[in-house]
Length: 425
Image (cartoon, rainbow, N blue to C red; front, top):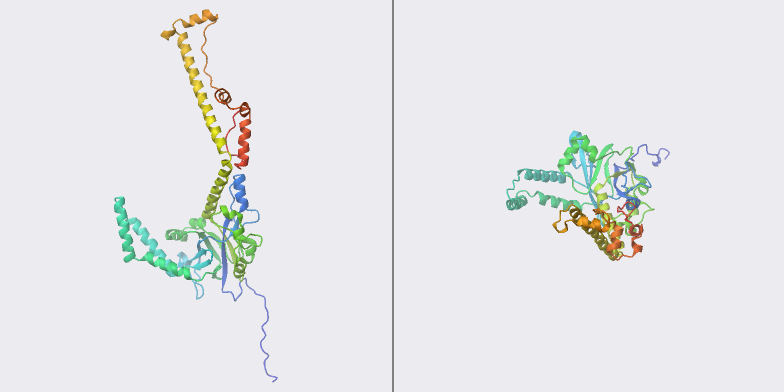
């Protein structure tokens, strides 16, 4: 038995590479730049526009990282197709498109890659739409509607592209979703962008050939040595707020009442975070300008509603004051026109141009021992008009008193310091 070999006992050895050999690819977790609560407060109180960070947002910035909204992630990288990794479609110069559909539904969230067949059908549909747009010659609106109806019928019969895409989309929805994107570890530099709607194929072709268009739409990321807008995947709970222990659950986020897209942790956020970080990879910060615009639009409507609630308390007083103010302004013009008429009549009397008042100036001079003068028309001030033509108490037209009322309402309505408007004595 002396010649028997001892059973092999595996020894723990440190990994020499960034990606362990048991991991076939490198993971990407795209996250969107979303406005923070601080940014909304800054807009509300100072009117300053939020500043978009160039890389991963830091504490105190106007943006933080959140889960993507429902949409698409486009990745342009070297063609690294293999038995385990597939591409969506070939691009120019040996590159390829990796397109992922991201779903952000209540009970279903994650990424699914567009297959090559889906991409081909997408291109076919885009090509047919471009050809139809070029060949369309609508003489009249009715004729155009008839032609469109006929084309739609023929398209569903002889060219069932739309029907095929709908069926493919149904198949894509049935695919299992992953919490992250996984690329071949042979890929180093990638270009990546996010959109909440399908981008046209003409734009994708332009991105392939134009460096200017590519840099305008996409972010360049080195997934082997992340920097700038990318960082280590293991920092997920530190960098992405929706996975942070310091953040609130989605149902407890107060600011969701004025956001287009809700933020906050999901109920299973810890399980999702564990699955994402169970491997090597990078987090990528992607711009979402449409999402930010929609959030700002909702916030604008929210502020209008809050302002209307405050102003409703003063509606009667404001309307009454507006009517009185308009009446006083109208009387200023009325008084000035009357003075102009008097000026004209006196001038004609002095110059003997009025046949009804010939020699009236001489009679005036003999009676009052001084020559008759023409009164110059002068407009009343607003305060004089209030005093002469309205029954407003003197305390309300005291100097600077309207300013006090205006600033009181402006403060309670939180209109800000630069709301415009001038006070009148």
